[in-house]
Length: 101
Image 1 (cartoon, rainbow, N blue to C red):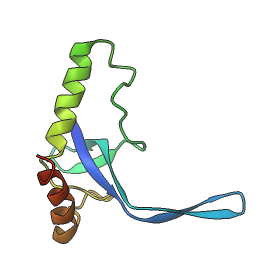
Image 2: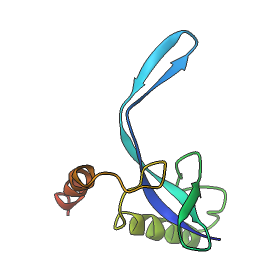
Image 3: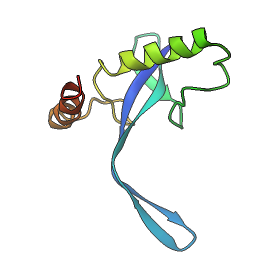
Image 4: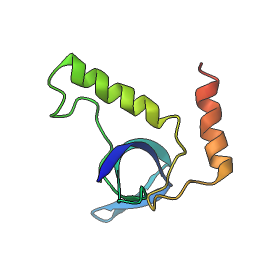
């Protein structure tokens, strides 16, 4: 099984704490995505990836993580069902990175 970092789109949602309901805005996050033998994504980490995780015990490993996370920015954004998000959303998010270069 192979894996890589991918940008995952999290749509707007609601969540409840006790009796109070909160709105969560849409956001993007980097997750580890795992692939089956045919190269299709089939699972991902529940939580977003934090750069300084337990495996980052040196500057070399931090550099490796950051380089691979940057590669994720050049791939299509996926939703939680591993489908590419609609082209208009892809374009909207891509536009924001191009204006910063």
